[in-house]
Image (cartoon, rainbow, N blue to C red):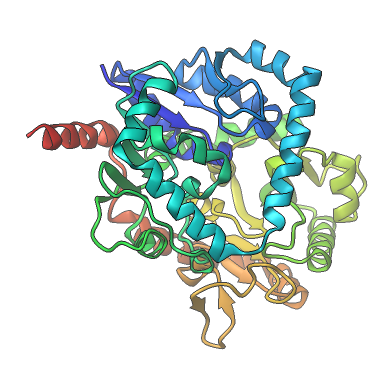
Length: 450
């Protein structure tokens, strides 16, 4: 029996990418432990931990009981974690930690931070330190580490690097998409021995070549596990799931669903003023058309947003039946929706999987990543990587959104064909085969033993 340590960082998104593989591991009779290295996220993650426990039969999670001491690790069940995060001492320590993190992030010397991080990663890879950490870290003999390799940049991961480097590391990016913004980061150094990079599509390889400063490395294109496991099942249940949701929301049979996969109003890809204008236009579209219901999938950082808040943003009555807030995952939403809106999201890949177009609502100016990309259209306007491959469709101002909404039915039919073709081109050649991960690990273990 093999033992795996899964690092749940930076957010629940990484679990969603690994979920089906973790289920495979458990069905193979192997052990999986889950490490939560960010005490600040424990409260927000708590509802998700119940689903994780059910999915992969994890009774206890490895957590830090003192946010100011990274080595204060304990295995706690969900009930104990809930008790921990409500303790006054834990909250106080967490607030101090948050203040220290804010101070660190205010330091803008990115090059210096990268060089310092490289030095720390190199020192952490020294054999004597690795042997020491193996004895002092979590009292279990793990064989594999499952994580996003780019999390090694994070300050809160540094105390655990020496231990991580003792294991065979398997990396998988926490988003489905093709990265277009990685060139803004300085490349990092990390040990390349005992490192396997898994990727959903070969179009993403530049992310690793640039970010890890390597050309030849152990790299496997695996496709998207969640699509392989869930697409057919969701297609078969589409009509039932739509009907069930319409009954729950008291909607007529002629109503169709649209999804908005939101993100915080953080100016990352869309500035605040444009965001407000876009949402108001969508609200008017819902009223005027009368045949759409908007399902809002809020970002985890938007949990404070209520239906009243969204009604105000959309310019709608909170008692109206034009929209609702949903807890369904992006793949479920893609299966029952006709199309989607986002403020840029890798969820567009889930929609493209079903041939459903996702419309990116962006700002080229006055946004952090609006023009940070290596992809451009024929007019020289910056595009996200997904939009450049027609996995999503970019709207850059309110005039473009108005034109789209005025001809929505016609536009959706055309964009559906583009979405289907784009998905086949980007992901169709290397689709995930159930059991692939176990076969891959078996091969690597046999290769290393010979």
